[in-house]
Image (cartoon, rainbow, N blue to C red; front, side):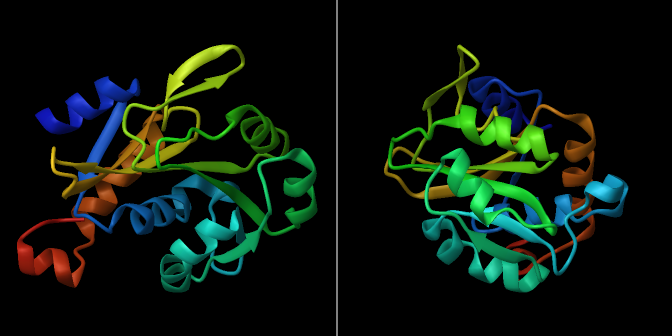
Length: 192
């Protein structure tokens, strides 16, 4: 990890972090979850993520590129998630936005019960604290993969970052970042 990645990981409280060009974080996260190294848990084309209405709109382009289906749930309650769950559900997306932390306990417990991946997105949520099982965590730690955008002091995006506490998703992130170059990134000389 670079010095910046180490600083982000330390600030959030995770073991692993990588940075990618702005706008590439969500796509890389879905590619990681679709990697064959994850076996039966891999999120493949035609399978679905449970997302809020807000996230469905924001992730539509990424889902189209990966052929992942969005199934919309209305709120972070067990009942709403149960209603949206189907035999092809493989992940749940939850987003902390505009300085408001989501309630993580219901979503994390739901993901654990059904062996689903949990993507934890952060939008203008740097430094937020979440509670889970009576413990306080930085936003991005409770999910299997945390995705956010690092901004400068003026609010201008610098890069996206992905963080995880687990070694295999981190290794896949690094391998995919090295292997795949988006057209926009290539013109800027950045690798995804």
